[in-house]
Length: 491
Image 1 (spheres, rainbow, N blue to C red):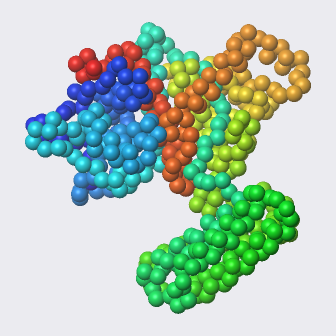
Image 2 (image 1 turned 135 degrees about the horizontal axis):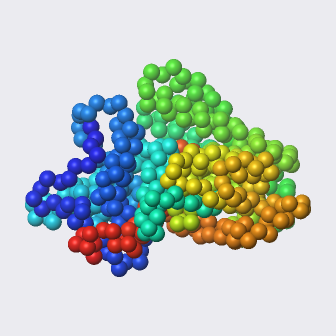
Image 3 (image 1 turned 60 degrees about the vertical axis):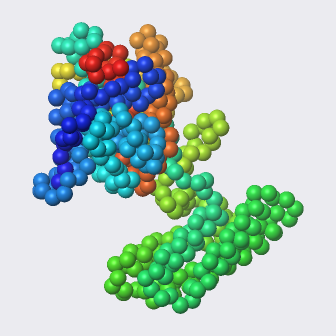
């Protein structure tokens, strides 16, 4: 059973509205804490976010059983992890030792009677994975609209529609994988097969695998020899590489035959652990077969491998080979992410792009934004893109939603397009489009530089948390500047 929030009941408990936040700090963490505190003490925001969390985490579950981590703790810890761009080990330390953070979660005491709640590392990992991309998107919408209301109040325009001036661009977000070559991916496949066989030996007596460590040594030695020849080149490079690769592939094929025999032996075993390991071994064996074929075709036969046949990681097979033409970063392995920011630097929308070009993203984005900001509270004033997004039909379709669409056409333009791009309003919006690059840079400091979580779903969830952490920091900055937190609760 989970609750929205449950304050410590001890006499020395520190109440959340009494949490001390350092207003003089220039670090980003106090801004995040201020944004979270504003959400907690604002009833409509508190209710909206808890409703979203309850619908996803609790669903139709019975409200009985052992108490789990509260929804508020889950939300706070998820945003802290991405705001500081840290791993679970550091989050574990902060959650048990940082006074302001623990106070904001409602678990800190003045240490008169007892220390307070202790978080286990695995508990953090299990709980922070519960939310999906859709849920995080809904929470982000609540946070963005809360920031807009504060900005409208600041400008004295509470009753007027807020005119949004949006900017969109894509940037590459890396996965946590090493640089791929066919040689090292073949080695990855072999060592994971051997690792899985080593785990199987804990449950079954396997004949023919007594010298498992020797297999590691022999295969790695041959892999290193091929890799060094390929890296250093030198005299008779082609013949030496061909000879070393032949030996490398021979032992890989021998291992593949032994694995096939092993899979036949353990097929039909009723032990659940053995069955799980058998499925893993089948997966790694399929990669082993693929990279034996690719290494043979590329090095021994001199064939150029089509891009569609390539896999860049056996651990994250979804990653793409991205070449954005950035100085010092010729290639990145991950996915492009489309972000849309407004004039207040909030990220109003984001999307993890899977094998799509920029010009295919603009129209679905326009439909999402029109749905998100429909009603009398908003008016969609403008949206700007760079040249890579240009499409004549898409631009025309977006003009039915936005008063001004800035989508420069690459190459030769007709007179009508020249006249449009010479207009003062168009030119002004086009020049302001570069502000989205600054927002992207700030987002990268909120965890969006490299995704630490595994799998495509993990990638999308990680980006969702990152955008929420970024927007909460923006919200906290407004709250601190406007002094919207009671004086006695803030340093």
